[in-house]
Image 1 (tube, rainbow, N blue to C red):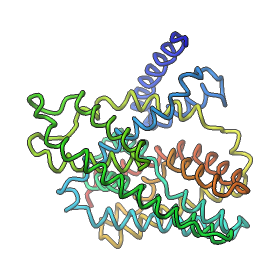
Image 2 (image 1 turned 90 degrees about the vertical axis):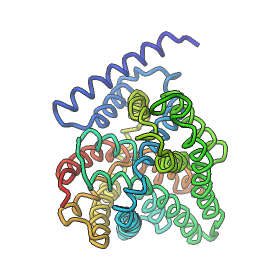
Image 3 (image 1 turned 30 degrees about the horizontal axis):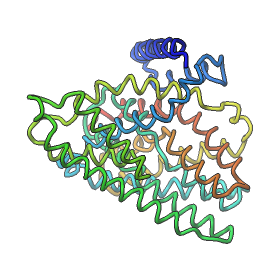
Image 4 (image 1 turned 120 degrees about the vertical axis):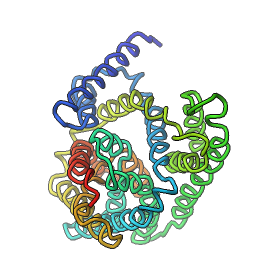
Length: 388
């Protein structure tokens, strides 16, 4: 293997990330969106400049980067945060998920999409992109109840999404003549196993971190726990996102001997995020977008409407400030890898509808990865510094 082209590409990508950061500060455009656009331009849909050997690292980088994001989100689920926002986090996350699957599935079915496919696409629409959401919140500079609450929602949102997707696959299988209850069992294992793994890693890590050397946790400690969690999750076939979130939450709540668990992760994750988002953009097939016309446009519109309605209803039920309620759903629009993963599973289970399920998901993911971070940024800036 010739390493020269790979090293050159890595150097260029890191400099592109630096430029995206600078442009984002000056224009208020989300740097995540800028990185995705750069990836699309440099990938197969554009100039095809990224070496194939580097593209092959995308899966590894995505697991690493997203596990880091999950740790940071888990650190927000402290006892104090849950005491203040726990009811709101559960209320809004559950209502947003239920509203999304119901409205998207019903709308697509009324447009003529077969009922099993409409149900599957409704469940896929519940998936979010915690990395883009977290980065947009950080870039916004917003402080207060709103960004804290959105981080908490994103941390638990995919757990509900995985469960709903498993139920949707089982129900859709019933329409096709064979309900696969095994999908529900697998989803329960993916969630419960991930939470158990987070506890298994988090408890000893909480005791050791910051004690191996004086002061705050070191970068070596943080990376060691992140890689260990991600690797064990892959081996056990459980959600690395939920495992990372659970481990981060356990450490944040049990490591009382220092101020903030794994502060170093926030410093080191951006280089991984640069590679993740650029390669994600390079892997997207933008040519699929035009092929889905009215159904694709309806999916996008229905998902936006459902998340806005769910955020408002959930916020109302939880008694959050009225000025925040219109913005919860807007902040939860980013969608990425988890949705594509769900689509791949559904495509294997329903091969006759694979082109529609996978193609529509990939096409709309391009759109939500472009507009989602900007929506989160706008929502955070409009509501983030207003505690109601």
